[in-house]
Image 1 (cartoon, rainbow, N blue to C red):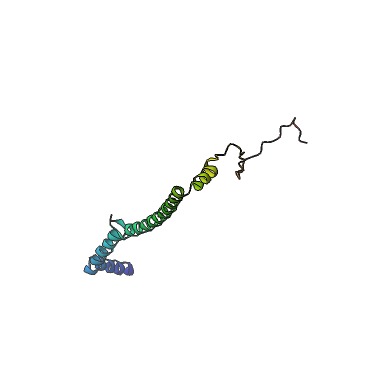
Image 2 (tube, one colour):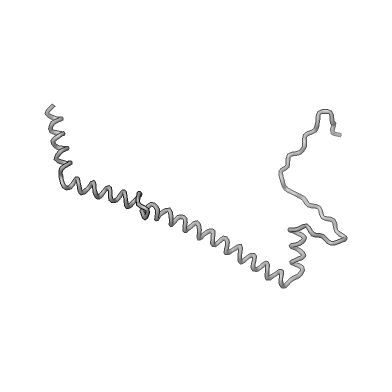
Length: 119
């Protein structure tokens, strides 16, 4: 019993001491500023990561833009380039040509019906 009483007295002294009160206030302040606040360190870290992702996306779009601008300049200078794009993308053809489109799509083959036979 004496040990429990001495522990109780020690804990009461610690709880009423100024150092304990200041340390609790400091720890709570750090938690609020670090994690709970709108402008916390955690939100700054997430925002910086998002900024990096957006910069990468911007670089990708700029590369696409430069590629498209070069293609537009080529189309303006070379009429054969326009013909090439029309043939490749839109499957246009001349009057004396036939077009065969080969696809890499993984389409399921239709099964054989039981009363049909394959030869």
